[in-house]
Length: 92
Image 1 (cartoon, one colour):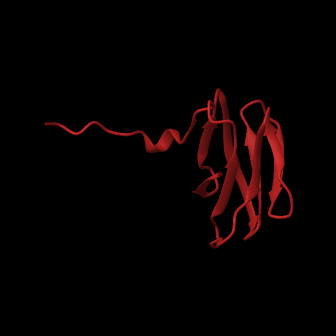
Image 2 (cartoon, rainbow, N blue to C red):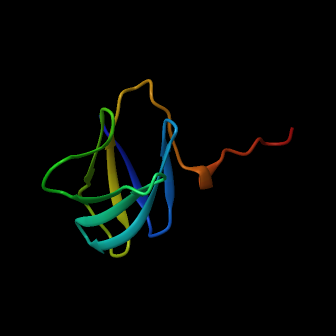
Image 3 (tube, rainbow, N blue to C red):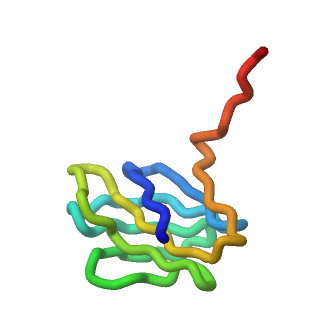
């Protein structure tokens, strides 16, 4: 099952040691990702795009204006996280 993230332009996510940034939301079903090494990817809902070894991304259903719905299909052993959503410890 894929992980789906709702991201705006400038938002980042990490897959393993690679960082990706939503560089442009072109439309409801099209956006661009920039990898930390400078490589760019155009993502649509029509087909999956391999953005790293065995990591595939598509534009997910139920889009919103200005939001890229990023569907990520990756091996379970790869950690996927959003650096801006760090879990905070609750004080006891």
